[in-house]
Image (tube, rainbow, N blue to C red; front, side):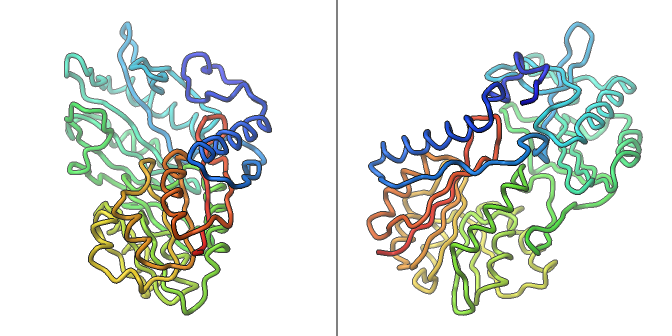
Length: 376
């Protein structure tokens, strides 16, 4: 067990003081209770964890605040607008300390004023960074594109990372959204960064969704492929498909994949990723899953994979899945409450064949779950 000097203030690692094996047991029991509350009876094995449950996050979101003449750079404290000033984080990759040092040096050298939500003054709101294979995608979120020191910041990043992708997001919103996706501007370096997952190459943009723990993500995707048991006669529905990594993985093993994702930016990136992998047996549609499913012949698809956001599936989507007569469904979820709610509705026509929880976020209360359902 490792100690964190910010633990008393930050609140981001709510289970850090708990032995790791105990954390896995607690998460398993929590999911069991939620399923029982929804009248779902099934055996749930102990949560699948990590060998080394630290340094797993590939993304960081730094916030800024002026306090007594000093600019704090760090994380919002749990349930508060206060900021814990940091120079490292046990959950982030080892790259985090040099990134924070660069950002602090930049802010100090050019005296960039943090945005004040009360007075509505200042420039710098957030820095969001993703690091994959020593390539960094960094987005400065500010109230204007016109602020000094961008060349300095880019040069410092180039000195410390293999590849650099540098963006500015102009956000004048008054809500808590980090990005204003209508005002994302590429500045310099690589337009995208990427890697590969189980033999599929992918690129991401600043607003792309990608799991922060690629080790557990790879494990879950591998299991999903195994559970779907794909062959060259299968037509697959990939719902809430993001930038298309699962779509490409399935397409390599089946006849066709129909991918549906709400966000236009995500589906555009999915199309780029399909071209990157020279895959042409996929169709990628943009829109709300339930509404898109109303316009297609769902009975064409015999297997379904879905990975919705925390809110789970809409009733319209569940209804169309039940209309489909798909013989197998694999559901990947980041919220056991909405998962249990949705699975309970699917049990009208399906039965649970497999369930496993995964520790995507060690030292936090969050847990990821994979459920396989077969048609009765």
